[in-house]
Length: 234
Ligand SMILES: [Fe+2]
Image (cartoon, rainbow, N blue to C red; front, side, top):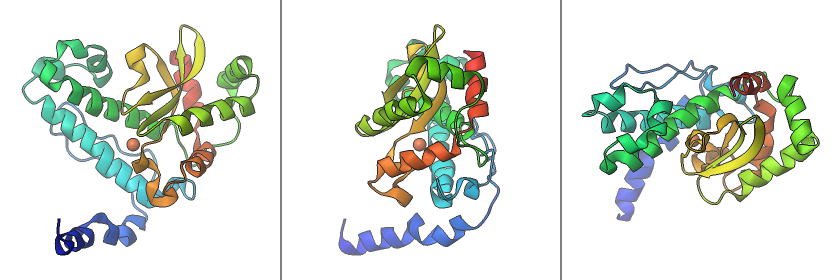
């Protein structure tokens, strides 16, 4: 790409729209064009400021999550039998999909499932210490909330490249795991209770290479009520 083309691409990119993106707005869901739809954010883009910035939320939800939904829908165009399944069911039955689209489905349906949960795991009223049954489960498993945080931060920091850190439940036990790319814990039969997206797209606009600062800030927006709801389903 020549310098002129690069400059044009830069000018035409999302960067100049920053002012627009920062304006208060209510996220909306576009019309469905396949089996899956982009769920609206459960709060405005700016709701998680200053921990997660408005621009990141807008790009992350409207561009990245939307791309997973759109790509999954495209892959499923000629597969009505697969389209009938919920995204979670499809991920559990990837062997029923033609090999040519299996990786694409794993990445994009996985991305859709993970992000749909991720928005709900955060709240403008979130943060603080866990409450209810998850608080007791964390104390029992990790000794204290602080020790759990240290171990979770380690998992999130050490995930090389793109992926997720999770608190999951399986067979009545909770544990911390991390997954690469968009692999959801359900591929291992685990239920996601809490998850942190450590793809650069989740934090780079505000935190650049400072993933640890993003992780620290994210603890201020965790919706422990939602985590408890997930635990109750486990
Ligand atoms: Fe993401």
